[in-house]
Length: 305
Image (cartoon, rainbow, N blue to C red):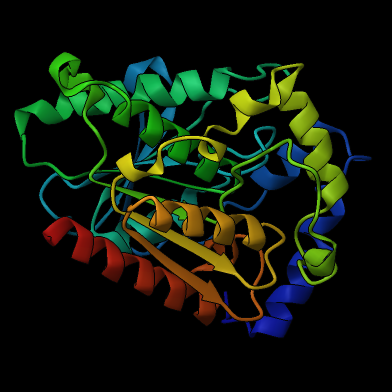
């Protein structure tokens, strides 16, 4: 596929993704359309079906990896759509750039499986991966995700940090780093994003609100947004990326400010004139390749420190 300019890519996602990620489109149709184009895989991509903790996943690697560097990746899709297949190309580019083995988890989705099903699956997969890493105790373990998956990744990192050291089992090992791409951290917050709404070519506020309702299924709002009142000082070194046109950019910036004020180490980059999770266009959009390069460089610095 030829490289796209930013205006070309913006037009493409506005006229495809934004049209079907809409509350009027049935969830089954949204899921099916996302599955149609898994993207172009980098040469040398190796994919295996696995089920860490009993949760289906794709294990993705490309070429040489840092010995045993492992990443649990939680895909986006507002807890309602998305899969390891629809994220396969992005996972492969991420694996190659970070020289990691990436597990893309097929956690259960709403509305069939509302909160806390996705979080339970993320916990189960992490426990299995961490237990397996005991054989090589210096193995770097990273939790990562985008959009709703970024929210899951943060929640998982906070959960693991809350386990007292004296009671911690190998399966409850803390991540060495967290990567949050356009994270959706507060699914039921009041929408206050109108200044950005028309700039983001991907997200509808109405679609997000509908997905949040399906995910919550009556759950208390505070439960769904643990970062709102959590002790963020316990977070591992964290990388956060947003585009300035990302509907969730204000949410990401507010989180970064709170985390840094609490003493957490956070590497935050905002990319001008780019939108929600533009990074998944790596391989066809040079701006996405640049962000991925930045992510890999930051992750190397964290894991070598």
